[in-house]
Image (cartoon, rainbow, N blue to C red; front, side):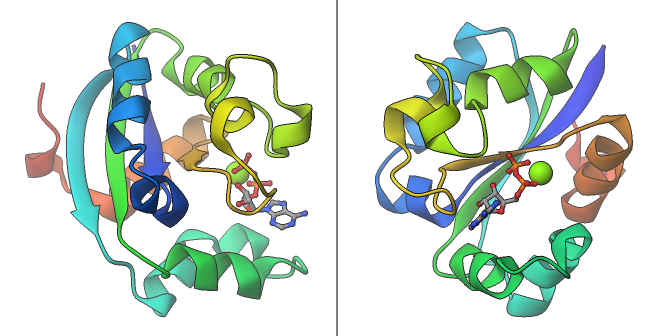
Length: 138
Ligand code: ADP
Ligand code: MG
């Protein structure tokens, strides 16, 4: 069993795609073990994306992430990290496989609907960034 962090980004929330994302998680045996809607501060968004702080898109990305509320979830399942990345599709929606969330809904490389952890270390630290142990069920 593995856990991973999922975020429905501000574009996904604003476009009414929370339910669509959750439906795909549930249909693919990714169990939601924690969930909340939050409005990130700039400092919180910068902290979350600290690994990208030297990238040219960092300022734009962090401002996008505070442009509206987000839905943050911890997911659990067999190979949850990789299986959720497969459901999301490639970062660039133009390169994402058919039937993935990003292929089906994203319109820009930055505004790509969802976030997902990229490995066991980032999953653990990202879940811990948003949830304490009491908030994780199961
Ligand atoms: P992923 O979300 O697929 O793990 P990254 O960790 O590489 O992708 O990037 C984090 C987020 O930064 C992406 O989801 C996207 O919103 C944004 N991003 C990545 N690359 C670019 C880019 N070249 N231009 C603009 N935004 C980008
Ligand atoms: Mg990433």
